[in-house]
Image (cartoon, rainbow, N blue to C red; front, side, top):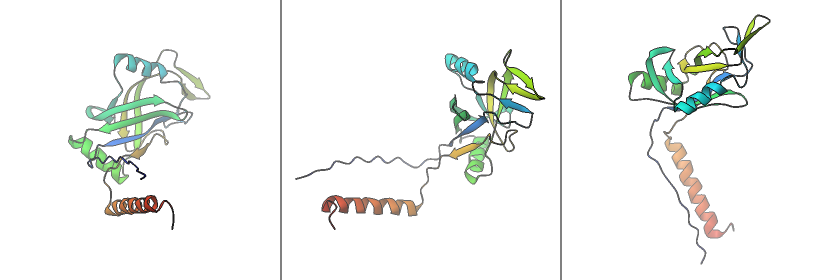
Length: 182
């Protein structure tokens, strides 16, 4: 007799307020006539790691309006990737999450200080190569057009997707029982 052990794990639906995106995209000229070069955040991120800290998550650069935590901040080939979690038990965190889910809010913006020797001018453009990132804000209108939230985690499933899952399981069971024979 053949046996097949299958393990399934189901988690209770929750709205954790998780999202991700890019706070900076390398080489993009922003509304302040600045371009950030790859590697500009590395020293700052190393200092945050050593201190056990991360940049603060704010609502529109307001230092009195902390709305969540950044769970991941790293440089990759595209830019400064961020993953965060809103504190949805606060009024502003819940509002931000509702706006994200509705697609009404998707901008990101950084608050920073330029490190010594971390900037140059080129044809009137400020080229940033060394940045101490202090905070990353959710904003309605980012100064850099590509500084956007690209993914908002959604846990709720419609009954249609549950029905599709059940149907797929039923078909898989039938295929295992008949071993693929029609």
